[in-house]
Length: 146
Image 1 (tube, one colour):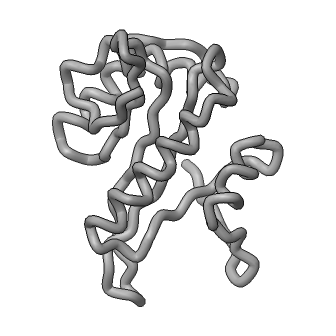
Image 2 (cartoon, one colour):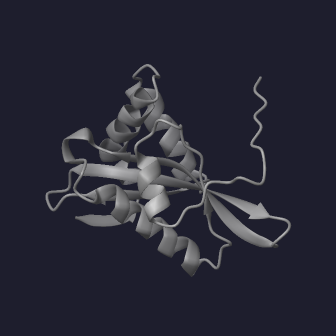
Image 3 (cartoon, rainbow, N blue to C red):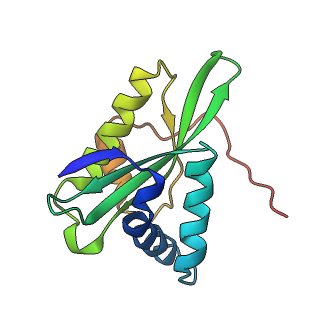
């Protein structure tokens, strides 16, 4: 397995993974829109996407980080917004490898760290906790949607 930063030429591999990720979260499949969304993030340098590939070049999974800043610590921080591993290869350490890759990337960028949110029923939360992510018990998380 190889993990690297996704580029525009990876959209044929990355697009179906991203579409499957959205379907996992109960959204309708829309491969064209998924590819366009990713193309915009990559083209405008708005996120960092790590892509896990098999030796043959097929897509195994990905994680997507969005840059932010912490005013209090005066450091950058990344929001780990997406983590997905293809159903056919789950349980083989790919998610953990992607997470560790993202953690090393944040360390190399001298960030405060990574932040994420996940559903209370998402089995990946066990991975996050095992890797040292702490559940926030000191602040509330609010959302406002239009």
